[in-house]
Image (cartoon, rainbow over all chains, first blue to last red; front, side):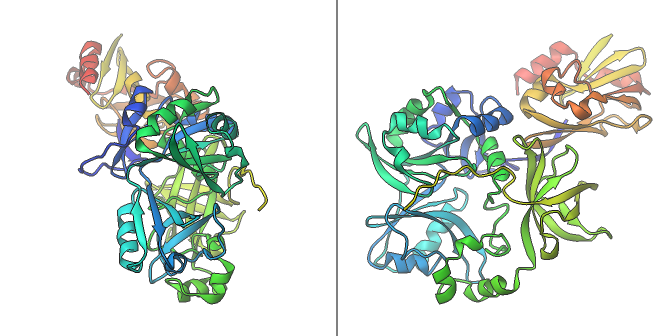
Amino acid sequence: MGQTEDLTGTAEPQELLQLPLDAWHRARGGRMVPFAGYLMPVQYEGIMAEHLWTREHAGLFDVSHMGQLRVSGPGATEALEALMPGDFAALKPGRIRYSLLLSEEGGILDDLMVTREEDGFFLVVNGATKWDDIGHLREHLPDEITLHHLEEHALLALQGPRAAEALAAVVPGVDSLGFMQAAAFAWRGHALGISRSGYTGEDGFEISVPAEAAEALADALAAHPEVKPIGLGARDSLRLEAGLPLYGHDLDEGTTPVAAGLEFALSKRRRAEGGFPGVDRILRELAEGAPLRLAGLAVEGRQPVREGAEVVDASGAVIGRVTSGGFAPSVGAPIALAYLPAALAVPGARITLSQRGKPHAAQVAALPFVPHRYVRKGS
Amino acid sequence: MSRYFTEDHEWIDVDGDIGTVGITEYAQGQLGDIVFVETPDEGRALAKGDDAAVVESVKAASDVYSPVSGTVIEGNAALADKPELVNEDAEGEGWFFKLTLSDPAELEGLMDEAKYAEFVSKL
């Protein structure tokens, strides 16, 4: 038996770093694998069980590989708007926007969460891209803007329909937050930054915690009977069912916000005023459409069709590509995300995929595959 | 009946010139939740080491190699609807295919249960 494809890809020889909860994961049976330069738990009891547990109860994820950045100083709003298409001027303290770092050509350098704090912005960026992001920000932000990398902070995510109840038992008051809202809390003398957001399609929270308190907080959360630790494997299958793109797979510098279906990240005022990288191309694509569009696929049969599979036409010519794919535990069937010619990227369209020389029939599906269950609260 | 093992984590039970092939308990544990199995068609001629079957878990796709040369006489049809049989009973009901051995001498290069256990303990 030999592996042909793996979630984590081929490990390149590099020095792997440990995260604050390394020993905590190992003590709970986490199987540690290389990911984004760190050793991370891919699973504990099994991806399927962990996935389904998160949809029904609450899953505790360690996402400390992600970059936590603080941007402050006079003109921080304008400085960030020069690099991203979000309306940060209208973002009130404690509110979060999903945004995109864009290249001059309108390509996506990273996707990220931007939270307005009282005296600046808190950014959460992808682990695999954080060093490039920091370099990009340092190069482009004016000198009077301070960029602080919170390297001594862990990031935990608690996701699932019972997450609010479990987190409120440890940190009273968090259930006052609505989806995409954030606030500071104190726990045993440590400052926590908590947002009601996540990457599973479920209600849930992300908790920025000083590294020295991360293990105690993880213990306190995992002590709740509705909470189990969940690995990266289920994180990937949960986000795929939720139709959420993964940077480095569904998004990269060669993809644009319109092609990726991320028009909602292009704020109305910014579309009107411009002033962000790649604005000409992005506005043109908004008006005329992008040649390729990211779409969800329901794959027929049981065999997963994974990243790298080709979309082919009747003559066998390659017309698109699968960027994420796998077996969807809550759907009970294989699903995928693929870039398709725009004319085919409509729900119901039938397409053919080719993987290792074998054809697979698929149908374009509306996203998300599994309905989002966010808990919204009025402003 | 004797059971042999490969370094690629296949097992083969041999009864006369008929072999039954599957993946080991260790392999299923490493793969995790198995969601799809493709077994070879009856009549397919396999050389030792050929890609004979495909097993896919939630996170990975793997090829299963034929431990010996021979001709396939049956794939395990039960795996089409219940691939999880491989997780539940990898070295029993979760078998992949049966074949007629064309060169039983090839078995001499495989491990017995004790040697395989020792091999796995060093991984």
